[in-house]
Image 1 (cartoon, rainbow, N blue to C red):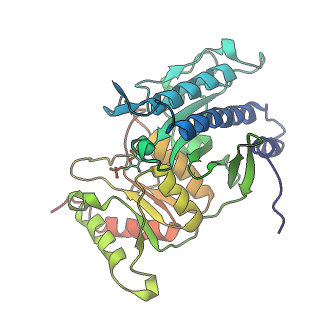
Image 2: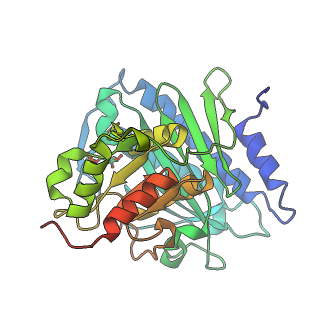
Image 3: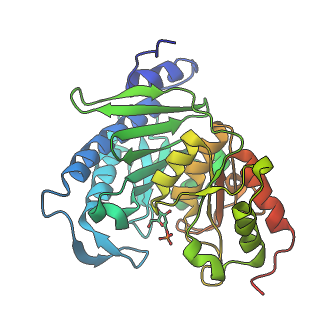
Length: 343
Ligand code: P6P
């Protein structure tokens, strides 16, 4: 079958045309995000050549050493969102609080800057220096306040309220994967023309897989039910495709992207040290959960749907079980046996 030739911008415009009432702001916003990620991609791919590597000596809100590329990616996204005029607030892993944007930048004087965005500007940053794939994750909501600079209430909405979500993975090629609720579509950056070209239309994650992705170094810290689940996956039973293969890159976007295309379950459970797990709800779990559900997969905190979680703060963490629907359902069954912490 001949692949339809399309660029990311053309694709979002065609999606927009399905909604007569659309003002075009979301299309422009997504194009702005793609532009920012092209700029970030340039630096990521050059990082090995210039002194952008290494530590800035500062710490971000997570108390982690910040590498210069994290700061750079965050600055580019903030700048492009502010100049783009379609957002009233930007939230980021690198920013303690949300950044309100007043409407002096808005492009359409009849319509307020009606969106807010959450970003993980450069997820997996600990892998920057060893040339492992890293990524930018984004999540877009409609504002709930009516006009002017955005407020916290605009930024703390359930994942089900997202109007768009996606990521850009900076790997052997730079790929953008997104959804606006009309399926999941992948685009590969052609550096010679500087465009994201449609490469994976209507991605569907395999219902069941033979791959699990988890940091087994935490095994002794998990509650018993999680330990039982992983042990089950490693037992031999050809009928249920066991033992599963273990694949763990330690870069969420890279692990998720592989599972999205090939099937698999990624899990970052809570443990005795991290009672709510490590990963962040607003700019990691929610956007990837929107994508995986649109691709026919499932995403849970072990007890319930990630997208149904009512957020309490911008940087709250959540346990995450995400990927092929049958695998996530089985993990939930193991966890339902009892919710006691490790014996
Ligand atoms: P661990 C990278 O720092 C990150 O935030 C995610 O990209 C990744 O999935 C996770 O942490 C890896 O955590 O504890 O296994 O190193």
